Amino acid sequence: MKKSCVVVVLGIMMALASMFSTGHAADPKIDLKALTAKRVPILLEFGRGWCIPCKYMKPILEEMAKAYAGKAIVTTVDMDVNKDLVRSFNIRMMPTQVFLMPDGREFFRNEGTFEREQIAKVFQDMGVGVPGQQGVLPPPIPQSMAPQGQGSR
Image 1 (cartoon, rainbow, N blue to C red):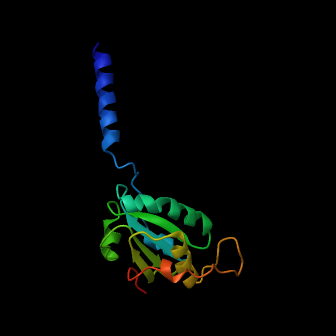
Image 2 (cartoon, rainbow, N blue to C red):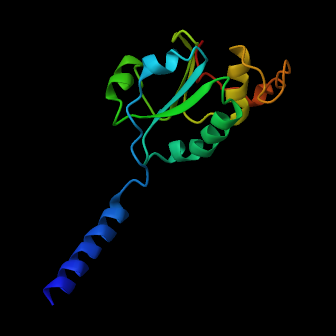
Image 3 (cartoon, rainbow, N blue to C red):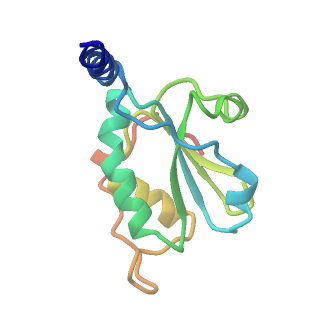
Protein backbone atom coordinates (compact mmCIF):
# COMPACT_ATOMS: atom_id res chain seq x y z
CA MET A 1 0.00 0.00 0.00
CA LYS A 2 2.77 2.43 0.93
CA LYS A 3 4.61 1.66 -2.31
CA SER A 4 1.58 2.41 -4.44
CA CYS A 5 0.98 5.71 -2.58
CA VAL A 6 4.60 6.74 -3.15
CA VAL A 7 4.32 5.86 -6.86
CA VAL A 8 1.09 7.85 -7.19
CA VAL A 9 2.57 10.87 -5.40
CA LEU A 10 5.71 10.74 -7.57
CA GLY A 11 3.56 10.47 -10.69
CA ILE A 12 1.52 13.51 -9.68
CA MET A 13 4.67 15.49 -8.92
CA MET A 14 6.15 14.62 -12.32
CA ALA A 15 2.91 15.57 -14.08
CA LEU A 16 2.80 18.92 -12.29
CA ALA A 17 6.46 19.58 -13.06
CA SER A 18 5.90 18.94 -16.75
CA MET A 19 2.85 21.22 -16.79
CA PHE A 20 4.81 24.13 -15.35
CA SER A 21 8.08 23.62 -17.19
CA THR A 22 8.95 25.91 -20.07
CA GLY A 23 9.31 23.05 -22.53
CA HIS A 24 12.81 24.27 -23.31
CA ALA A 25 15.97 22.65 -22.07
CA ALA A 26 18.46 25.24 -20.91
CA ASP A 27 21.10 25.95 -23.50
CA PRO A 28 24.62 25.32 -22.35
CA LYS A 29 26.78 28.19 -21.26
CA ILE A 30 28.00 29.89 -24.44
CA ASP A 31 31.78 30.21 -24.78
CA LEU A 32 32.14 33.23 -27.04
CA LYS A 33 35.92 32.86 -27.27
CA ALA A 34 35.53 29.30 -28.54
CA LEU A 35 32.97 30.44 -31.12
CA THR A 36 35.09 33.32 -32.43
CA ALA A 37 38.13 31.01 -32.59
CA LYS A 38 36.36 29.28 -35.50
CA ARG A 39 36.86 32.49 -37.54
CA VAL A 40 33.44 32.47 -39.22
CA PRO A 41 30.50 34.89 -38.89
CA ILE A 42 28.25 34.19 -35.90
CA LEU A 43 24.54 34.73 -35.31
CA LEU A 44 23.60 34.72 -31.63
CA GLU A 45 19.90 34.78 -30.84
CA PHE A 46 19.14 35.84 -27.28
CA GLY A 47 15.89 34.54 -25.83
CA ARG A 48 14.15 32.30 -23.32
CA GLY A 49 12.30 29.01 -23.72
CA TRP A 50 8.91 30.41 -22.72
CA CYS A 51 9.12 33.41 -25.08
CA ILE A 52 6.51 33.05 -27.87
CA PRO A 53 8.48 35.00 -30.54
CA CYS A 54 11.57 32.93 -29.59
CA LYS A 55 9.56 29.75 -30.20
CA TYR A 56 8.55 31.18 -33.60
CA MET A 57 12.23 31.74 -34.42
CA LYS A 58 13.40 28.26 -33.39
CA PRO A 59 12.67 26.40 -36.69
CA ILE A 60 14.06 29.33 -38.71
CA LEU A 61 17.30 29.27 -36.72
CA GLU A 62 17.55 25.48 -36.98
CA GLU A 63 17.13 25.72 -40.76
CA MET A 64 19.73 28.47 -41.02
CA ALA A 65 22.20 26.57 -38.81
CA LYS A 66 21.99 23.59 -41.17
CA ALA A 67 22.07 25.72 -44.32
CA TYR A 68 25.14 27.71 -43.24
CA ALA A 69 27.03 24.85 -41.53
CA GLY A 70 30.75 25.38 -42.06
CA LYS A 71 30.22 28.95 -43.32
CA ALA A 72 28.67 30.56 -40.24
CA ILE A 73 27.58 29.67 -36.73
CA VAL A 74 23.92 30.08 -35.78
CA THR A 75 23.13 29.48 -32.12
CA THR A 76 20.65 30.45 -29.44
CA VAL A 77 21.67 32.02 -26.16
CA ASP A 78 19.47 31.25 -23.17
CA MET A 79 19.28 34.55 -21.33
CA ASP A 80 18.85 32.84 -17.94
CA VAL A 81 22.00 30.73 -18.37
CA ASN A 82 24.19 33.36 -20.07
CA LYS A 83 23.52 36.49 -18.02
CA ASP A 84 27.09 37.72 -18.58
CA LEU A 85 26.54 37.79 -22.36
CA VAL A 86 23.16 39.49 -21.91
CA ARG A 87 24.92 42.27 -19.99
CA SER A 88 27.93 42.55 -22.29
CA PHE A 89 25.73 42.79 -25.40
CA ASN A 90 23.23 45.09 -23.62
CA ILE A 91 20.25 42.94 -24.60
CA ARG A 92 17.00 44.84 -23.94
CA MET A 93 14.34 42.53 -25.35
CA MET A 94 13.81 39.06 -26.71
CA PRO A 95 14.38 37.72 -29.14
CA THR A 96 17.41 39.74 -30.18
CA GLN A 97 19.68 38.54 -32.97
CA VAL A 98 23.30 39.73 -32.87
CA PHE A 99 25.51 39.08 -35.91
CA LEU A 100 29.23 39.01 -35.21
CA MET A 101 32.12 39.23 -37.64
CA PRO A 102 34.66 36.37 -37.48
CA ASP A 103 36.82 38.49 -35.15
CA GLY A 104 33.92 38.97 -32.72
CA ARG A 105 33.00 42.57 -33.63
CA GLU A 106 29.28 43.24 -33.83
CA PHE A 107 28.09 43.69 -37.41
CA PHE A 108 24.31 44.00 -37.02
CA ARG A 109 21.54 43.44 -34.51
CA ASN A 110 17.78 43.06 -34.70
CA GLU A 111 15.24 43.16 -31.89
CA GLY A 112 12.18 40.99 -32.45
CA THR A 113 11.54 38.26 -34.98
CA PHE A 114 13.68 38.05 -38.10
CA GLU A 115 12.71 36.05 -41.16
CA ARG A 116 14.91 33.59 -43.03
CA GLU A 117 15.35 35.95 -45.99
CA GLN A 118 16.42 38.77 -43.70
CA ILE A 119 19.01 36.56 -42.00
CA ALA A 120 20.31 35.47 -45.41
CA LYS A 121 20.60 39.12 -46.46
CA VAL A 122 22.69 40.00 -43.39
CA PHE A 123 24.93 36.99 -44.00
CA GLN A 124 25.25 38.11 -47.63
CA ASP A 125 26.27 41.59 -46.45
CA MET A 126 28.87 39.88 -44.24
CA GLY A 127 30.31 38.09 -47.26
CA VAL A 128 28.77 34.67 -46.65
CA GLY A 129 27.39 33.16 -49.86
CA VAL A 130 24.24 31.15 -50.35
CA PRO A 131 24.48 27.70 -48.79
CA GLY A 132 25.30 24.99 -51.32
CA GLN A 133 26.06 27.43 -54.13
CA GLN A 134 29.54 28.65 -54.89
CA GLY A 135 29.75 32.34 -55.73
CA VAL A 136 25.99 32.86 -56.01
CA LEU A 137 24.37 35.35 -53.67
CA PRO A 138 20.69 35.33 -52.71
CA PRO A 139 18.39 37.86 -54.34
CA PRO A 140 17.99 41.12 -52.42
CA ILE A 141 15.17 41.34 -49.91
CA PRO A 142 12.25 43.40 -51.24
CA GLN A 143 12.09 46.76 -49.48
CA SER A 144 8.73 45.82 -47.97
CA MET A 145 10.43 42.94 -46.10
CA ALA A 146 13.42 44.91 -44.85
CA PRO A 147 13.32 45.67 -41.14
CA GLN A 148 12.04 49.16 -40.52
CA GLY A 149 14.06 50.90 -37.84
CA GLN A 150 14.69 47.70 -35.90
CA GLY A 151 18.30 47.00 -36.72
CA SER A 152 21.43 49.07 -36.64
CA ARG A 153 24.69 48.81 -38.51
